[in-house]
Image (cartoon, rainbow, N blue to C red; front, top):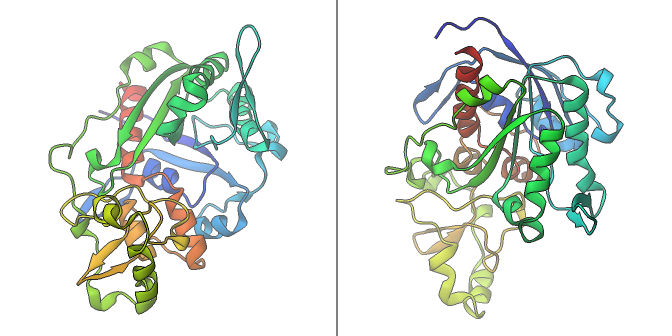
Length: 327
């Protein structure tokens, strides 16, 4: 396939840049090289300064720290591909005829800001990523209205839940990817990437640090372990939260800095002792290369990584988008 152009990307809700890194490619992960795609990120924005500092430590493009509601479309560069994982906690379905999408608080408005920029800038493609729970939000009523809103912005839509462990990532992370195309023929050509490791997933053992490299502060105290043992959750601990090294990890979230043995977050058991994942291990679980810099506090790094799109999954999605655009 002969590449005829370089596609410009605008990145919304960029976070620490997992989506941008995956879209651009040109990185190594677990001994494999993910080649550079013919794309260039020309603008990125997020409102959280501490997370933006992580982005700026890893990309030559400096992120615009801004509330998207204050972002005027005319200030967004022209682009071919718009990307973003809009916040999803705050949708409501307004009881009108016909039913329509509303919002419970300011976070729920952010989806409409993405649609506004799509309508005004008219890129060829957009990619939105979100939690699998978006499909069932508001008893399943919100998602069809979200798709309808994207269609009203002028796009033909395909969506699919992708499990990161099917694409060479050591994590059972399920996320819905929504891809929209202006051109119907390009939309018809696009297919989501086929799984590459569904029957042979990458195990957690591939990324866990050797014991001597893990500081004592990552281990839970005897008091915390005894406290967990005294709760009603103690019998289920080994079934859910302690991770099996021969399998991919359960999903890592944004609040790992506050992980406890009574929470549902994944932890490790090493030589009879419990510990949390280090930020480097979380980065690896999310498929960031070891060259990815984590300059923030532990809390910031965990939040940035836990909210990120797994770069390797986004790399596979972008590869198929470019194939559809170039065919």
